[in-house]
Length: 569
Image 1 (cartoon, rainbow, N blue to C red):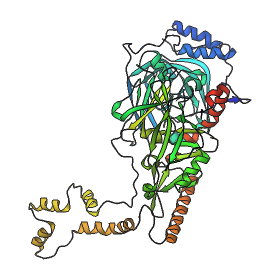
Image 2: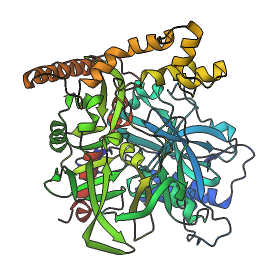
Image 3: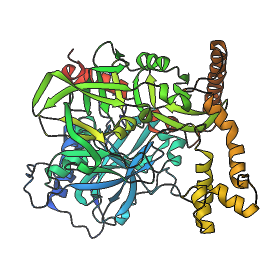
Image 4: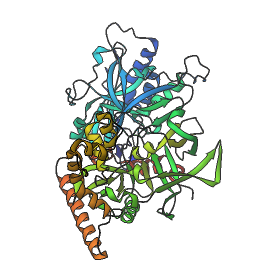
């Protein structure tokens, strides 16, 4: 989840608050102040005098200064961490903080770089979220430095601290994180989601205070063999998703992992050369794309997304676009193209093409209009963006994604994700055969014929069995089957007289029916947007509403490195 920074007179600056002269590092009773804590005490006391000293305070709190271990370190191990999927909108892992192992549901977010948890004494609801209590941890150290981060909906603030943190099987002794006391900027949505806080997995360059991200700290301390993290996102809530620190898991992808280089060392930012639909390039020039596990959908420049929606004949309302689910077979594949890395060599004459099918980018809303199920398109336009895309969970579910932070060779890799269950979106008018429905209803895996044979212990057909039982030369359908067929008849007629979601009749009748459906869908979207958001509306829920990544990337790109902001043609 990309964040929006605090700015003053158009220039990026960390928002610094004065620290009282009597400020000191606090430790709980019984926790002996080690030499490194004494050093932190001196640096943090003077932090308000010089922002550089503030960074030194954080660096020493994380134990920096020790050269990274090699992968031959005996403690280095790949850390496979299970994640849970909540409504395909957020993927979170259970993370323990402090010596007392206080457990939090934290989003693993490649679009930010800070760790924060809600703290006791703040305005987070203790009945809906776990609140960090520093008095329960003997390893807690307060850095007495402010934490301020601005999301699109408002601020989140607290103070910086250091404590132990366990992610999967790896425990870090000194992680700098934020105790958040004010979460009002997240609005009412915060109390509707499972997540408590965030583990940022971007780069230190975009963190508040220059904090080293967790994955880099794991590698520098010799706890994982490589500075890598890999995501496999399941499409079903009941299945465990997974992030791997320090390597990859081959059972979750098909074929080799192919890489594209980063064009910035702030975000996981890559160059996208083309976006093809039916062989037409939707882009007029190369674009930038952040691969972001903390954003639920795909976000892009409004003019381009509008063009794509028009091509799909989607109905849009306040940026939320939908189509009848029955039109899935008519919708196109979307082909994203990126430069290709082979080892350290950039292959100028080749492109990495990653394809999203309608199954990948459609989400069943659970709602109907004019008797047709509505499907949302998991892509949204942003008027601020000019050449920036965010490839969120919609994209990452389709492709196993590897983030390689090797210094000097940063890159992102992709391979087709392997899912044991389908993510397909079906139209309720495509009902099973009545006999299949009856089998399901009766809880049997056999046909009526086999069931009757089994019941009567005879090798006769339904006709013969009924003739023998009733003494008639004709057959009659079982009452249950007849009722099922009668119930199915209207749906079957509609299915048989509708081809690829188009109503039957003349061209004029089809156009009128389509217009009625689109008006109904539009009205449904408008009513739902004005009312209380339903749990099924992933595109309203939650994180792309809480961020303004484009403004930040554009400004920071210009202020920090014009070379990073420019994209080679």
